Image 1 (cartoon, rainbow, N blue to C red):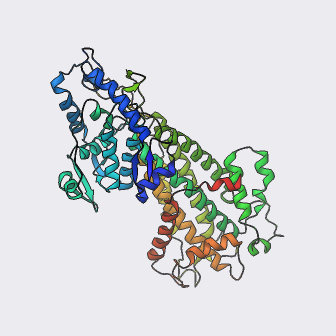
Image 2: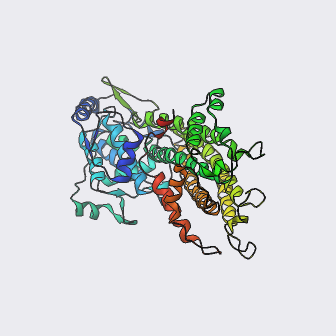
Image 3: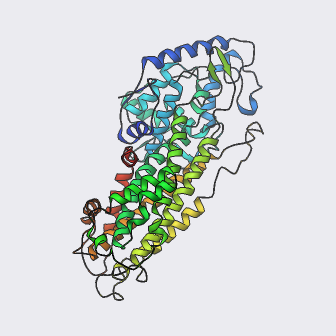
Length: 506
C-alpha cells in the first residue's frame, strides 16, 4: 500500500502502481493539508475580487468574472471543453501513472481541492478503472490540459474508459464496480486538468526503462565484445580515473567484471591486434554518457512528481497565479533522452554488424550462417532491420522543445511541446528494445559458434537465459518465433521495477 503525502515518491513507486497494481491511499497528513488549503479557497469564493481559477474564466478568459451561481458549472465545463484529445489512446500503464502523480501533487496541499477528489483518483487505481486518454493534444503548457481532462471526466461519471483495450462509456463501468462519481466544486476542475502529469507519467516510466536498458545493453555488449575477441584493456580502471565521468566509470567496471574467467579472452591474449573498433573499445564512454543523461533525467522527474504544478497555488493563506504548469523541464529532458538513446541504438547497430559481417567477425561464420554460407544467409538481414530502426530514431530525435506555437489567444504565448517530446521518447525506447533483442540474439548465436570455448561466468549466465529461446539448427529458418521470445525477455527485464544496480560499481 502506497500512502500519498507521507514522503516524496520515487520512480520505482510510480512503476509499482502503474504496472504492477500496487494499492494507493491518502495519508492523514495529506488530508490535513488539503483541508487547510480548501478553507482558503472557500474564503475567497465569496470575494468580490477576481481570483483566477476560483471566480474567473480560464486562459484568455481570465479577466471574465463568473457569477456565484455559475461557479460549479464552470468547473464541470472546463473538464468537458478540454477533453478534446485525438489519436491512439495512451497505454494503461501511462494513464495509471498519470492518475497517481496527479493524486500525489494534489495531496501536497497546494491546490485547494477537497480530500474526496484525491480519494476518487486513488479509487480509480485501486479498482483498475482506466480512463480513455487519447495521446495527442497536449502542448505541455498549461501543463497537460487535454489528457488530464479525459481522466477528470471519469470521476465525474462522464467520458469513456478502456476495458480490455475497448472503449466503453464510463457510467456503465463505474456502476459495475461500485464507483460513485462526484460533483466538482470551486477550483477543482481546474486543479484536475492543470498540471504536467501526462508528460511526467511518460517520462517516469521511460526513465525506469532506460535505467534497466543501460544495464542489459551493457551486459549484452560485454558478451558481444568477448565473442568478437575484444581486449578488456580499454576498460581498465586507470582509464576511468583519467576521465572523471561517473557513468563511464560504472560501465567500465561492469565490463571488467564480465571478462573475468573467460576462456575466449585467454584464447587471444597474445594476438597482434593493437586496438578494437570504437563500438567495442568505447562502450564505457558511450554507454556511460547515456547513463549520465539518465541520472540527470531521474533527478528532474523525481523533482517534478513531488512538486505542485497547479495554477493558482494556495500557499500560507494566499492564492497565487504563476507558471508551475509549464512543461519545459520535462520537455528538455525528454528530448535529451531521445538524443542519448538514439545514439545508444547507433552503437548497438554497429555491434550487430560486427557480429555478422565476415570482413569484421574474425573466425565466425559469415552472417552467422552455420551451414553452407551463400545457400544460407544466416542473420544477414537482421542488420537491415536494425539500420531501419536507427534511421527512424534519428528522425524522432529531432527536439520537440525547440518549437512553440501560441495558444489561448496569445495568453499562453510560449509552450513547451513536452508531450510530443515524451511520445517520441516512448517510440525510441521501443525501437531500442528491438535493437537490443537483435544484438542479444546475434551474440548468443556467435557464442554457439565459438564452442567449445566458454565466456565468463556472467556472460554465460546471460547466454543461458536466452539460449533456449532461440530455435536450434544450422540452416536458415523463419526466425520470428525466436526473435519474439528474445524480445519478450528484453521487455520483461527492461520494464520491471528498476533497482539501483549501479551502486555496486561505484
